[in-house]
Image (cartoon, rainbow, N blue to C red):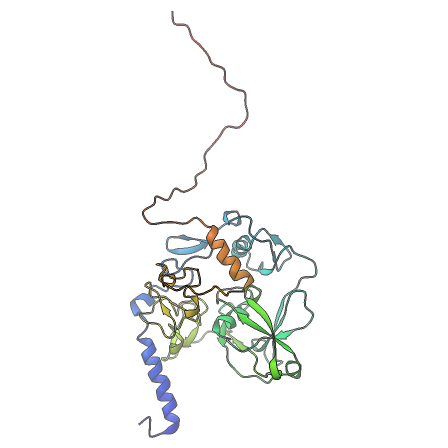
Length: 343
């Protein structure tokens, strides 16, 4: 029947793809509503600790010391990236702006170029200490980056679509550069991602766009309901990309599509394999004999990796001795030896 009617062929293929992808999901696991803050499934960030199976924020003083000074959007300088992120947990308006000590002139701006809507359009970015706004290059653009852009703009659940076509304005056609952007997908500010200026060869008209998630609805039969109640296509689950924004589409997978399957049933991007950072809980993503070169150029992704190396390491079979506070008496006079005579 599908092959007899041309327009039905595409619909049948999509339904078959969704049915096949649904078999990748473990329904019993989904009932637990795991997210990126479930340390039974993933490692906590360096500014978090695992308590009762959940990642909760540390206090800033519990972070490693002596890394790199960073500046927040409110103009406050923190001793390192971990301290800023730990502070952000309690004060969500205090987000990362740039590395190094704050200066008065620093500003980072993200906007959508669409006069008809505030929640969708082509993305423009004004980097710190730059005067020109740049559009984002479309190559390697995914829901990981789109979710971060929308989260940066105040849409807590991230993006709805990342590939909608918009009319390209004249300013984009004449621009000689665009920004190549790479995110892990859990950043709260686009400034935390890798942003590299690249030449816009031959005035390429293909720029990244986004449609932010601004309303909840009931999911369709061929859609997956994320833990944050966002709806995504079933065929976009278990593919190593954080489409949900809370990672719930990648945490209960018996198989993975074009990505790596961890023993904990987590799907991670193939590019995370052998990158000198353990992403699977058992470390199987770093167990291969050949180790590829770490090519990450992200300022804060590199900082995040450095912070992880400074944290206390737990090794199986070795007793973990927690640091405890001991009371001490400070000051006073030196006690004299007292002798007593027995009569």
